Image (cartoon, rainbow, N blue to C red; front, side):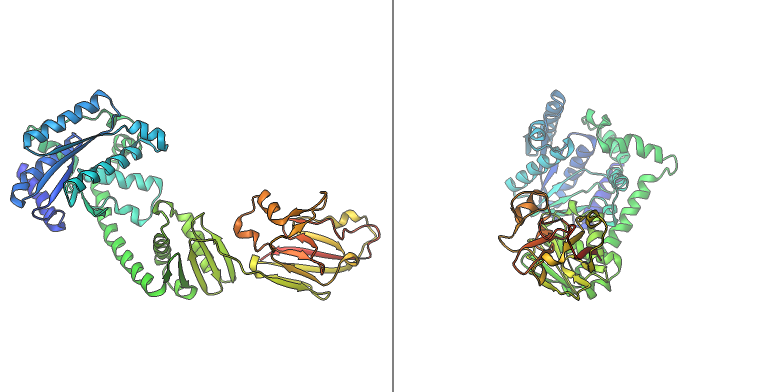
Length: 471
């Protein structure tokens, strides 16, 4: 078994070029069977390939005396092998309290930070981790249960670059049982982490409960999941390259914005549409873990809608999509809507407002003899005494300094302050329609509220009814 395992790992290292001859490699050793086995295998190969191994261990101080004992064990193991050893003592519980991260996320963040520091200290090009094939299967199962796309089914990569250092996983095709057997045949001691039995951690629930239960239906479940990662890795790689070619061909990137032509986008397969959006957002520095399916679909649907001509979608506080007919622009700054103004004549029955994807329906009618209650205005309907209006009327966007006298309140308020009080999104404030008379008096903020002017009363002869209708 010893020769088979070492040879298998050696072959994978050569095929994937995980480590080059003469490299300095930092080996992350927790003290468990996986990392102890990895250190032993790499040590067995080190002389042949002139590798310089550096052992790195992090004491997270989660388990008190048990954590201290592990650190002592790793230090002695390194000394027995004649390897330099760096022990990092990190108060992860205090870091959790400081950052509000969950325990595993906080431990991982501090562990990787320490490992990069050691790599820099020894000018190492590689950091080796002992993740194995069962870890890979559990990772994929976790992602399936939480919801993932094709890229998530790829699982952990055997190698990836981070901060100018290659993170490698030479055991990723080796199963746990083979590693434990290897340690047993070599009579290698290792530590047992009691936290691995705690079901408060999601991964432990997957390993202890979910995987054994599902193995009743497929004894080769880990192998099946790992075959899935192999298939998805190839397909994901192919689609990623296709998306990158399309990105270079149809996008125009300038500083904080990226432009595409809608027709170029609609001609793509839906899989490439989604990937292109992700590529654009990644280039605009939106964090990958915030690119959820719902967010991507809302952007894709905005671009695909045929009847939309001009619209702004605020993806989040970082990114906006501005659609102007066939031009689609992704940008990291709030757009400045163009001011607009449309005159409302006595013969106007309908007024299109493309800025808000709406229209105004206008009715010029004689006043009814019924009670004035029938002329009750709402956010989307306003009834005005036509004879009290200073014509012509104009529907326009707001201007700096606009003031409004709301019906039912004394005095006036700045329109800007009213929007802020109502927590109206910034993207809407400069496009919401204002109905203004010839003197500049604001009569109605469409979709919001009316003013105290030109109210319909018992003496009203002619009524102007305006209704805001979204397209």
